[in-house]
Structures are given as C-alpha cells and as structure tokens.
Image 1 (cartoon, rainbow, N blue to C red):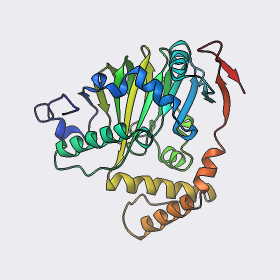
Image 2 (tube, rainbow, N blue to C red):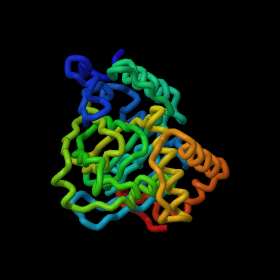
Image 3 (cartoon, helix red, strand yellow):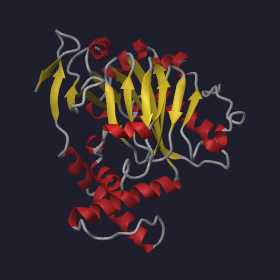
Image 4 (cartoon, rainbow, N blue to C red):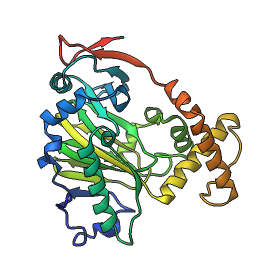
Length: 307
C-alpha cells in the first residue's frame, strides 16, 4: 500500500524533489503505529539514549529557552498529558531501532521515494524520529546536514523555510553544527521571516525542503510529527567535508580551506573526521555542550522540577 497519496508524476513532484520545497499528501494519520495509545506504550520502553525531552519558550516569546530534561517514572499516558499541558516537546530518536514495525515503515517510505524521484535517487542511512509537542511549543531556527522530511500526523503547525545561502546560512554555521551537533546556536534575526516561505502543515501532509535550508516551527495545537532523514552519496560527502573543515578550524580558525567533495584534499578531511569519530572525540565534544536540567513533575502534569 502506498504511503504517499500525492500523484508524483501528475504534480511534477518527481522533478522538483531536489530543488524546491514540496508539500505532499500521505496516509500516516490512519496508521495504528501513530495512535496515542501505541505511542504511550513506546515511550515506556525507550532507553534514555533514544529520547530528548525539551522545555522551550512558548510561541511568540523572543527569549530563547532550550532546556533538556528527564521523563522519570511517569507512564506513557502521563508523559503525553504533560506535553499537552506544558511547553514541552519529546523527540523519540531513531525510532526504527526500538520498533520493528517502525523500521519496516521507514524502509517502505524510502523505497517509494527512491522509485519516484525523477532520474533515480539512491538514498541510504535512513533515520526516523517522532516528535510529540505541546500546543504552544516551538522549534527554533536550525538546519540539518542530511536530507530531511517532516510528516504531520496529528494536529497542525506552521513551518518557516529560509533560503540556504548567506546570511541565513554560512560556511561557519555548516562547520560548527557538523562538529558539535549544536543546532540551537545558529543565529536568527526576526527580519529573516520576510524572506521565508511559510507553510501551515496539517495532519496528512509532509514537507521536504532543499538541502541545508534553515527552518523553524511553531505549533498551532497539540502535535505529533514524524521526521525521516537520509543521505545520498553527495550529501554524505558534504557532511564529511563540513565536519573535516570544522575540526581543522577549531585549531586553525583563519586557515583557508577548499570546499571540494572529491580529490586528495577531501580524502584527507574525510579521514580526519572518521578518525575523530572512531576515537569518540566528537561525542565528547557534543556531550560537553548538553546538560539535563529538569524532570517532569508527576504531581502537576505539564510542570517541571529543576534538577
């Protein structure tokens, strides 16, 4: 059974996938994997490394609030109810690793994408997350180093997509986030919104934007979203290039480096990035920038207790 309900060929979606922001229709709201009861059971089985619980400032506030916390001993139903009442979002990370049905769904999605994008599309390293978030929650301005899609399953949200060029995106941002995976430090100015494309994403719609496009999200109501991420050979090379350049610039910030994704210079940077990753140094750099500062209050759902 097809997951997308958009006619790829009739809408020329198969030709625009690589270069434009697209909104496509899908049938995931009817999939029992995304019922709130199923999600509650999934939450209760999650290893700590497979979720991020974030406390954010509500939509409309200028001050950036970005704190990470713990679920604690709450039931899955109570976690979802706390999210309904608070300014929270729960990211279930790499859900395909903890749910065999979700793993099969991810395979089916990319089988369909790869078969429909014009000229063929060889994707790999597929990853999927589930985001459950409060009516007033937001996700701040950020971007990703891989291809990404955002599927709205329950509720609705407003998505701002910005040009993937300066000043909205710079080489320094690409390198910094590749090294530290620190999405929240990307600078944002309110006037950027004048240059954004704005989409009100409803349940049963999916959005896919061009590679590296910065974006931010405002919830319009309680929301369940599904995200999928992927690489192609060239996207993977770019990610390695940015990480390699970023690692070099941590020691030699003024050194001029090439942005080629082939040749001996790229090969050296790829080896540097791979070696640092194998030694676990990237993880150490990233963990040093994250701290758990709260847990959910079991007696007052929607409230938090500071650590």
